[in-house]
Amino acid sequence: MIANRYSLQHLPTIAQDPAQFEVLYAAQDFRTRLIQAIREASKRIYLVALYLEDDEAGREILSELYQAKQRNPGLDINVCVDWHRAQRGLIGAEASKTNACMYKAFSEQYEHKVPVYGVPVRGREVFGVLHLKGFIIDDTVIYSGASLNNIYLNYNDKYRFDRYHMLTNPTLADTMVSFVQEEMIAHPAVNVLSCPKKPDTKEIKTSIRQLRASLAKAAYQFDSQEISTEQVAVTPLVGVGKKRNRLNQSINQLVALAKDEIFICTPYFNFPRSVAKEIKRAIKRGVKVTIVVGDKTANDFYIAPEQEFKTIGGLPYLYERNLRQFAKANEAHIASRQLSIHLWKHDANSFHLKGIWVDKRYMLLTGNNLNPRAWKLDLENALLVQDHYDHLTEKFEHEVENILQNTQLICTYKQLEKLEDYPEVVQKLMRKVTRVKADRVLKQIL
Image 1 (cartoon, rainbow, N blue to C red):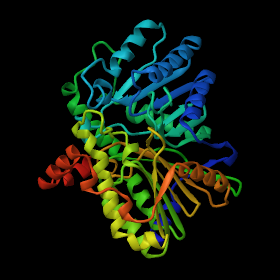
Image 2: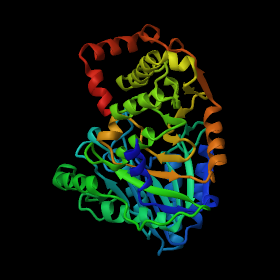
Image 3: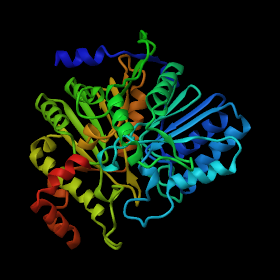
Image 4: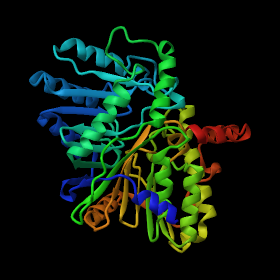
């Protein structure tokens, strides 16, 4: 315990004015503020996301970027997305025009270009993607787990609920931009997706391996600052792969140092073994643990029974089975309210929140799903906020209240459906997966 507290408290820190730390509560607000920031940008715009989709929202964002560039050609604009995701269609959809085709079409229309870089974290998408988060516009970091498409930006009266934070902080913004420039854009494996002669993945496979090896050693570089009693501390963290991953280590340490309470959000209930172990230890030592997870119908892979079923639609049921087993094993702690499990569901919308709060002093803003895939395969980052003088407590409580308003408290594991309750096609799939023990493999990559 002492070692864990020592490590976190001795991380390098950036001083943050609490008044310049803003929490947004809805996807619509996130979209409005992002577009406003792009329009008002005077020196730089760096957007990093898993994808920038070819749909109404994606085209609106790309249009705003290009218009900003035409108004001010000296504006430094760069977009980074996952290399593989940009060059395929949606999972389960017919092969069609890709996001990269949209980037190319936009590039051909305008005099001053906006490069969209494809970052290949692995040679194949299934073994690792760019899951780094953060939009840096001038000196403001807009941090969210959201990507850029209709559902994340609340187009067409449907949204995917995430967390949204705005931190105005020149040092933090400079630090995150430097990482993108030096560790990603400058690398030979990273190419502009709108380029008519971009290489095939096979042609750059050696460079991709070198990029991953380089990213595994990379860290945000900044001079640590003293934190006054009027400020909060922020530490940007990054990690990829299982070995020497500082982000993973910090998450484990964060859960391990909890004395009073832990509040965790995850869209896919499938904790890495080390996190599950720390949560179990926390419950044992009397810490109150609250877990908020999306209902299976609020999962982004959920397929309604009336629609044609595809194999990928089995995932929400696999996650619910994990949750039911966890709830059953902890039935006594649920009954005593030491463990609270909340299921989020709001109409036909979906749930994508991630993050950890510990003792109302530590807050982790992250795109990390807190699952084995994030732990071992994807490039992830986070902002660890330390608030030892209660500057952000009220904002924390409002955010938690906002998150919980569309949730149902699980009082017993029996509230969660079992295999026999699922549609017949799902039952068949689950039995097949379990019979060949494929569920063990799936848990490591999903």
